Length: 417
Image (cartoon, rainbow, N blue to C red; front, side, top):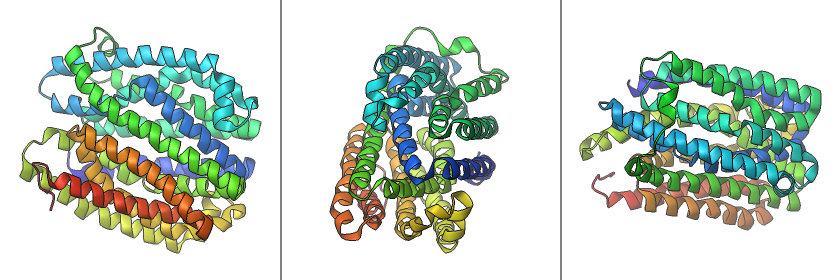
């Protein structure tokens, strides 16, 4: 499967996902407004952190080793059994924790206990979250791109209908519940898709834990947990800072900008995950790795720049289309946010190399430093530039990140210059 073909197949999934996000954003804009977006962002960060801990954050490792052991089905199944058993135990433990401390979690992330029931919904559906992500990682590692795309498309459609229905009926509370449960539906779809393949059986998901494989997966656990904790924590800190200093409506504008940015970058981030991570995992010679990185830059960066320019030119139309006129004040955020997004894509190409080659120390150090670098730059720039300071901080932070990891990786066995 080539980069171009993977990108084209993935584009179908991304188009569907972007259309569903368009509908979801419109509904949320009407029923919850800018301040509601801030609450949604806080809860999404909570979900991201908790699911990573529950699953053992091993899905990147599952993709890598499934691809790396492509010629050895027994070793692949050992990876899946080990990962599935860890995910099962972790999910049960995390679900109990969430159920017991639901009010405390609501106060921490949503600043009030009235939403504690949402965490009970999340507790009940967590096992489906983790197993769905595991099976998606298996499909990715097996390079079953068509099946992966179909699972993503159907999952996106379900998420739209669940979110739309609950938000229209119950407002912000319903929107938060939908975020807590929609992956439960995606699980059954992904399970059905996997079940129809020749290489999958439910029994392959559970069984004895292989200590060597668990140790190898543990490297990815450390890296994924670092991202899953420090990135959302940095966003929570920034969102709280913006809410307390500029008001929660301003925090909602930034959250809406970030959500739009995430949707725009889906094509690039998912292509890197679908094609680039398994490909790099299977390469071992320096010249092959260098060639693949250069190919990725030649294809992805020009598209990212063209996409960013198009969105910037059409920014007011995009805001009204995706949100509502109430969100028009966020148009000043587009330039620096889009600059930062292009820099993010450039840096992530090298970031995926660190993941593929399990460069644990470098990955963890850069994730922690630049997660809090984003927070620090926001604190420094916002008093001078207002809300614009947070998107300038985003661009500066990714410029520094890209430069730093390029320098760090130059001294490895594969030369990147």
